[in-house]
Length: 355
Image (cartoon, rainbow, N blue to C red; front, side):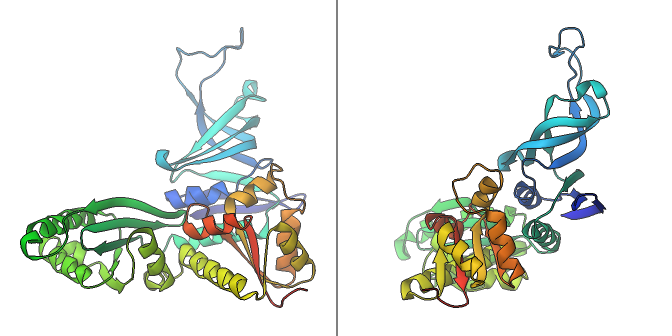
């Protein structure tokens, strides 16, 4: 993410122009832009005729600048774009005022956002700017008869390939070699700067030897890590062990895995923890929250006024930050976020236990 411009406007509002440079950046903006915000940018629009107000389906779309009052936001991961819909409040064509329009924001397109910014939203922007300097990483987990390839992104871990083959050595050596050939081919095509190769036993070492022979350029990006599992569990182990952290200075997902593990351990021990909106709001009121954990999707729903929580989420977040607590917003697309969702979408690591 790149911040192109930033200025204060009246009413504690601030106007920030951002340039998303990756799919991760578009995902971050999904949780920054919310209903009621003012968003502007360049777009194209098929103009309605003045006579009957019907769409001119035979004409060309006309480029223009629009400003919207946001009503809905959608992260279209597979279309590589962010969709921001709303009513046109300002426009380079006055006859379009009041109509609904959708800005399709793609990489390297400027988007200006004007709003009263929450602290966690500004922190998310800063994290996106810092993340632009971090290398892209893939995690490959392998054991006899199977291999899995995942890529690590700010919005979560995405499975890229699952490969299967015959197990064992000796008479099965040919099938094993074919599995390694296929894995080397997948790894060679990955557009990443670093690869973590993990799994139980010696199979990963044999796979590495094979990759070094058949795809030496990819082999030069590989670091080997021992894990007890493969697939999703193997990736979780890699993140917990800090392997990705050693490559990416500070990855969001590794932090989430660490915090959710600490949360679950404290729950099991009956230690300093709160979960669910009522318990967390009470802990925040007493200044007991050391770190607030909140699910991005839940945060967005509550801020849009579409949730079911009795407490105001902005008040809870502000209270935690005012009293020196930290706030971590979890991605709902990765396992730690799913675990947090099972606890109501909000939890807290406390400084002390409440009675």
